[in-house]
Length: 255
Image (cartoon, rainbow, N blue to C red):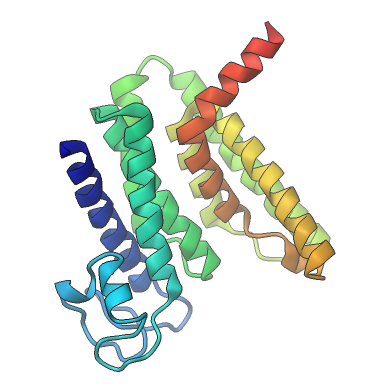
């Protein structure tokens, strides 16, 4: 019973923080505010307007003040954050190390939707992720600095190569330096083994999504592939949950 209560409370906190971060992160000329607000009328929201899942369902997906439709993303993030905490606790239980991974996963879910909505990856969010990665590294892997440096480099190189391929394949000259920072932070937190698994998940997922978009939705190659930072964030979530299982299966075949 205490586990269920802890999952609900922590999932609710994560979902509120994630939606607030996404709403407050600017999208070009989008309105931004230091407090949660309605994206249509810019009215500041009270705690009753931010209860995960319940507030969205009770208001039928509309703002309580101007009745404008709210992004479905709010409900999806609520469900994903609660599911993330539930899956992680079910698989690994409660621990200090697990709490670091759960916090990191919360940030990754935010990054998925920030990228999907074409908002900026703010330096403040990346700084928080960097602090969590450093704490995780110093607490559990202080003697593995060369491996940590190599995994950081691997994350940067992977995202740099993707950006270069995108430039040559789609004539899109933008090079996302923020994505390189994300790659370094993912490499530091995941380490070499889980980092390789996450990279495999991202490449495989990108190939599948791109192929489906071009074959069945008739999208151009430049539009078919999701942003690689979005793929890497989703792949890192999967690697945190099942990456070690994948490594164990691979080692059983090799040995």
